[in-house]
Amino acid sequence: MNDRWRAPLIAIAASVGLIGIYLAFGGASYDPANVDDPCLTRETAILEERESFELIALASLDGAACELQVSREELTLALADEEATAAFAAEHRIGDDAVEDALRAGLVRAVDDAAATGRIDGFEEAALREVAERAPVGAAIETLRALPGDDSVQGLLTQLGELTQLELPSLDGVPSVDGIEDLIP
Image 1 (cartoon, rainbow, N blue to C red):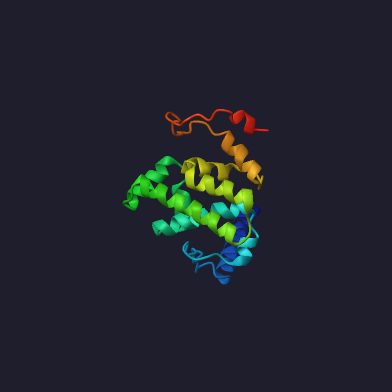
Image 2 (image 1 turned 120 degrees about the vertical axis):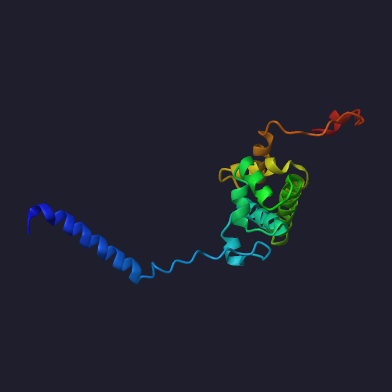
């Protein structure tokens, strides 16, 4: 055999062998993984592996996806940016308000689930419930997404404190409380 043809023939033989092995191990019958129903509770073993805020974030997505009757994965991709969210809303013929309402309902459901399983309680539960019910949904999601492994309410509050461009309600017309300084230690 000519040395000039040896390397290409070896490469072709290796490629054919690799394709044969791939087919022998079921490579021709690829089935994508099943997507879990977001309306069903996840298995306890899977939930126990998650950190508290990761669990809350995933449960929030489950709750919102359930409200919108889509998969958690589809909703996650839709929340990647404003353009993706707009395309998702248009595809499903829903308004931005419906997406926001579903996300808020998902956040509240996640706090309820975490409290019911004992993952959070007391101050953590109260703080997270306030965030779920009152914080702008986008800010709450960004805050949960930005937590860099700091699985604590202090980390959450620090992230919320760093948010800018929040549209907070005006305090005009709220009566002042004289002597409030005396109540603060």
